[in-house]
Image (tube, rainbow, N blue to C red; front, side):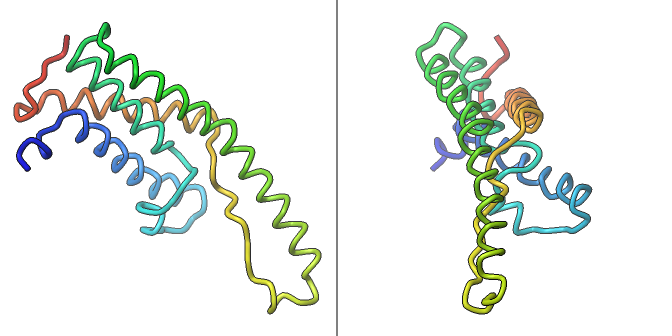
Amino acid sequence: MQDLITNYYLISAMSAWLLAQILKIFTGFFKEQKFSLKTMFFGTGGMPSSHTATVAALSTSCAIGEGFDSAIFAISVVLAIIVMIDATGVRRETGKQSRALNIIVEELFKSDEKNFDTRFKELIGHTPLQVVFGFITGVVAAIALSFIPVFEVSIL
């Protein structure tokens, strides 16, 4: 258990995810003018991208702990690129399609709303700016954690 809770790579990724989810509560409050703890644990989309923060922290921690020439760093960077492209590409387009479908379904079932209450989730993907701030969140989290002695890593 000691190894698990002192795994710098895992804790960096998890901490970045948690930090991004906490930040979403506040950025969501300023945008929507409503406070939601549900967003912290179950929210997708929004500012910053928690998926991006997670993989950015993982890549940064791999760079710090293993070096830029390591296989683990290379693998984590490829994973991070895939996640960031997916967040701004496929997932964002899915959100746009959901928004359009919700409008169509509302119009079709306008007279029979009580028999149709399903709405598609619209906030799925991210804007490029949300991904950039997710990336920054992840990098900062991994660097900050590298200074905690229990992890026994040092900045290269």
